[in-house]
Amino acid sequence: MYQSASNSYNNQPILKGLITSEKEKIHAQTLANSLRKKFRHFSRRFRREGVDCFRLYDWDSPDIRVVVDWCAGRLVVAEYERKQTGPRYLPEMAKAAAEALGVSGDKVYIKRRHTKIPDSPRYKKLNNRQERFKVRERDLWFWVNLSDFLDTGLFSDHRDTRVIISGLAKGKDFLNLFAYTGTFTCAAAAGGARTTTVDRSQTYIKWAKDNMLLNQLLNPRHVFIQSDVNKYLSRAYAQGKRFSLAFVDPPSFFKNEREGVSFDVNRDHPELIRAVLKLMLPGSDLFFSTNHQRFEPKLHTIAAREIIKLTPKTIPEDYRNRNVHNCWQIKV
Ligand SMILES: C[S@@+](CC[C@H](N)C(=O)[O-])C[C@H]1O[C@@H](n2cnc3c(N)ncnc32)[C@H](O)[C@@H]1O
Image (tube, rainbow, N blue to C red; front, side, top):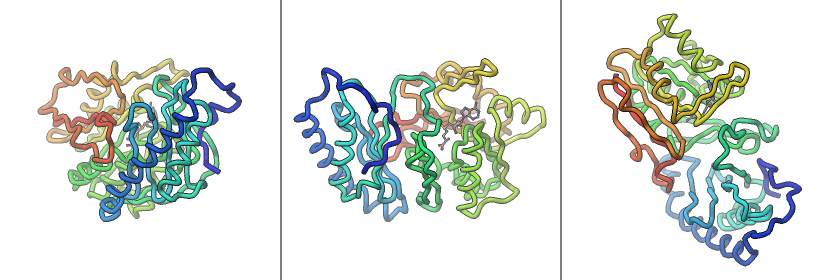
């Protein structure tokens, strides 16, 4: 039985205009062939590098809107939802993927993603199985959870950016905003920085601490703050806190209904970056990243010593989508 992390198709009537079962078979076959080939290409190399999680299929063919991630012997199979694929389609693709790579059904996780719904429930809980396990990314270990959330706890497209941050970290004061599970905090701490990790979610702050503990890095040099980023920035400025390295990776949109605040990365990134820059010491580096697929940068409005576009250099080879994130290094 495959593990489903979304039930949005349950009880849906069979729609007209669905992909036919013949086409479905062709898609399954094409996906299986591609996965076998990619696995041969990547698995040995990533094993050598100590990378447990990597992408095997990245919507490679426009017809097969599926993403398949390998995660330490498990598979996450996600589909960008569309009207033409009915309730059977994704389980069929998952079955083909599992058979192609010899993975048993209970180690395959199905996820349905939306492309167009702003503020979709990306960070909400889907299940509560609390099955987490450890994965390795070079010198670091992270907890991932494939069943309970749409995202797993680890964004592997940033594994090379973590190496950059770790390499710059020695002796620095690192600020990780919108920190999620603290993978960048672990990278900076491992590289020798003192760190401050900010996220509004208690769940992710706890997860970030667990990741630090897993890497034997949890100690009083590292501070974890559950807060809205805007509020933290005003407070930290007033308190005279200053940093020499920062990673800022906001969601594309968020809303705080209670306070009537909304954030749209396209509209608001210059203001956010300027607020972070007020905390940065001369000679420091701020890394700004977004995974908004139609991001329109307005970085020319930012006053900085130098602004370097890092992408696509930071995007690993297993990601066919060279726009999976966009990342800049802003030198102060
Ligand atoms: C795109 S993820 C960041 C990914 C992370 N940098 C990584 O690579 O692992 C967004 C995170 O922002 C947090 N978040 C969303 N709105 C926030 C806010 N207003 N203040 C603080 N954190 C927020 C969410 O809880 C989530 O953990």
